[in-house]
Amino acid sequence: MSGTPGLSTLIDIALAEDVGPGDWTTLWTVPAGRDVEAQIIAKADGVIAGVEAARETFERLDQGLTQDYHVADGDAVAPKQTIVTFRGSAQTILTGERVALNFLQQLSGIATLTREYVRAVEGTGARILDTRKTTPGQRQLEKEAVRSGGGLNHRFGLHDMVLIKENHIRAAGGIEAAVSAVRARNELELAIEVETTNLEEVRQAVELGVDRILLDNMSSEMLRDAVRLIRTAEKKIEIEASGGVSLKTVRGIAETGVDFISVGALTHSAPALDLSLLVQLDS
Image (cartoon, rainbow, N blue to C red; front, side, top):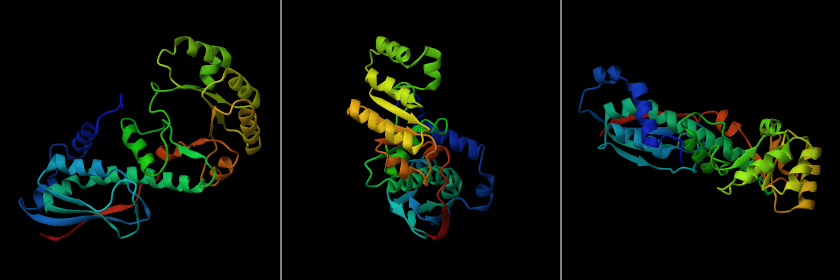
């Protein structure tokens, strides 16, 4: 995916930020050559994501460290469950601990919250989407975590789909003007989605035959009316709902008949999954 740093670059940045010129606490307290066994343990129910980021973090520090992962991205875990067992240099394990846990906890938190939303809409036919509300530089990792939780990815960036939002419509002079301008230049044949906030705007988008219509911040009653209007006129148009989405409201939104529900909270507000690394014993 273009426009995002690779995993190796992110890990280099994270290690440089955390370790700096040296992990003096570890270097001054732990004898060089001391080998130990350590484990990362789950302290809460959740869904794991970020295994590759954690693995590569330790590999960047010491390729001789043994890492035995007992779970994969997308696996559910329970309190006291072992995520990974390490065997090797105590200095490596302690120096890489925080960076690896930061990746694992943040990404597992996203996967866990996504799974909660996915379960909340089971049986409705609606699918949960992420948004571009991601941590700068970590979009690819966070969108992968959404997939690990059972969600789908919306567009990755501004370059792979046309989403004409309220401000585009205002600046262009209306929905028809905006869509016409896009079609006149869309040599890439990108899908076109239009954001709407009322039924009149929905009618305009339907008449223009766009690929997807976004129903933004509509009441349940208006959502049902909009879905009925779109389905009656053109069944091929996809329908997405956004705005006012929470775990309390998402089921009701799904039951209006929309195809997708986009949830910014998946990536911008997911609480980190509680994990802990513990040194167990000498090898």
